[in-house]
Length: 123
Image (cartoon, rainbow, N blue to C red; front, side, top):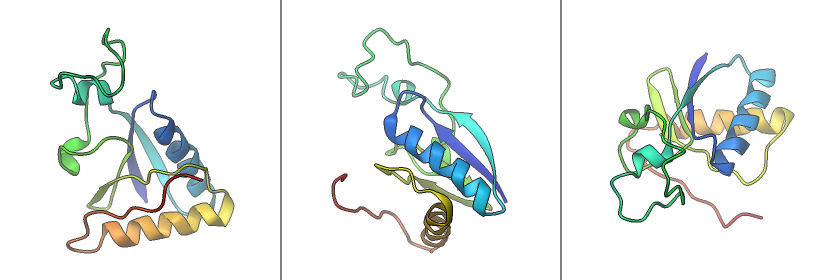
């Protein structure tokens, strides 16, 4: 399964999700295609830059948002006609735990009408 993964290299949650997808590649038949998406570019129209990049150094071409809508950040995952924002994870699942999270993400993202799922604050 080919998976497009849009990420902002300055986002710590995207870093965790990227490390998670490397684990997923080890335990599921998944190949990740890495894509850059800049939160600074997405937020350049805002008066206050939520990324704190007042000089614009983090500006890169933004891609991927059209797959899930304009009110998201990174990471964005798309595969087999599915696309979703997330997962936003505070720690990196390893091994089969990473595979189970992948299975769950694909399941909920493929459910018609699914929009959002949130958990408690980070550990």
